[in-house]
Length: 152
Image (cartoon, rainbow, N blue to C red):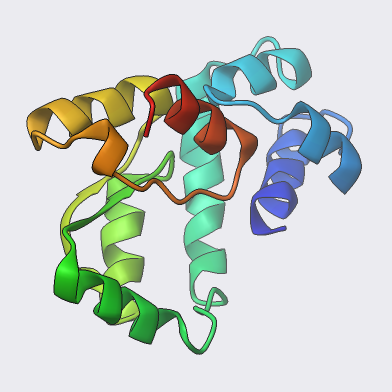
């Protein structure tokens, strides 16, 4: 819901109509420039990203992990190597992870992954990970599509 709210702030800022949550769920895609080219066709994606991330930072303090998530991350870390791979800005990811006390559990935090397939493929290669032995947890359809395409 945070991403949808900020997306609507972006649309308003650039003089465009806001969208419903259902529209967002059905139309939001990665890379995000494919999404925004429909709604803000004359605005460069770098300009959109800058405004989006500026707003995201203000929402960040409102973001809290579900109560049991830190324990789950700690437990997963005890037998696995963990990474974060996200379209969010690396600086934001690092700051939030530190604030939430989970930064120490991740070997690498990769942000600005505008193309999850390429970013996941690079992570697999750089870290010598075996796709069939790698678990990728995501919250968006493009995360599932990326994992399936790479046989993760």
